[in-house]
Length: 285
Ligand code: SAM
Image 1 (cartoon, protein in one colour):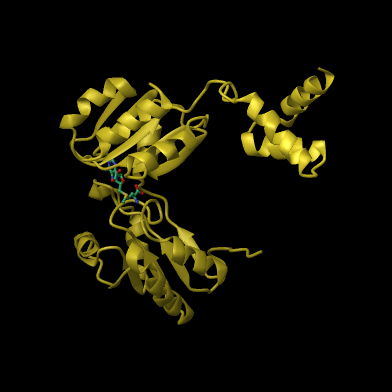
Image 2: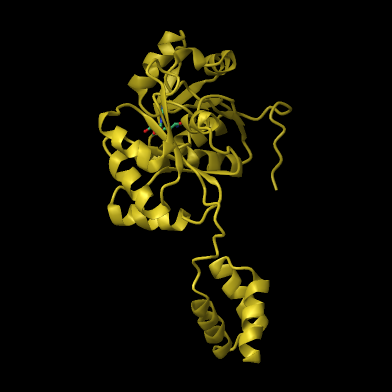
């Protein structure tokens, strides 16, 4: 167990600082103070962040922390923390870690007991979700789906029965393929495509997936896609014969019936009671 009282100790701190996803006035006064106070700022692209920082008259030592160098860069940041330095982590836009680098250093720094302090702020997924018109919770943030059709469809099949609102990111040149996969695998659900959030061309397309697809060809810019969860009884497509086979096989391999039912329930998501009743019915017949 490690307990962090963020502002009641002298330990060095790793600050997680969100930066604007479009509108520069969304860099908060606290973010500016923190960025001005730290010893070092770790960022994805030193040129991109350099421009943002000089706009706010922030002049600090910058180090690169990118997906491809997360291991060595994390070690570098850990050395800085061990030397008593405070470090801020930013990404090109929005929150670090949210489809951006940062996971490794947060895992290491928390494990070593350094302060890891988040600042509130910009993230495209939350902006898109709250204005989508769909139910905002429960939700699941998925981010980018795989690029290959097969892998993308496989992932979508995993999510097909999720009852929560789903939030995706996608690039404009892949959006058509992605939305067509969603239509094919998830069905024609309610959806919102939020584009260019916080920028002058901000736009929301709210409708069903099939209503939005014809509009995609002309759409540019950065996009968040919010899709309704599955509100059907998600057990209705389940092959009960398959579940019975599962239970029988487990029992044949030496499991007790109770354990075999529990195991089948965990593997299929069907309730233990339902499987128990099915097994009981079979035994009677
Ligand atoms: N860390 C960022 C965040 O917290 O939102 C996300 C970074 S991810 C590499 C970039 C993706 O975020 C874009 O391809 C797009 O899907 C989404 N995104 C970023 N800015 C956006 C904006 N202004 N409007 C809509 N989507 C945006």
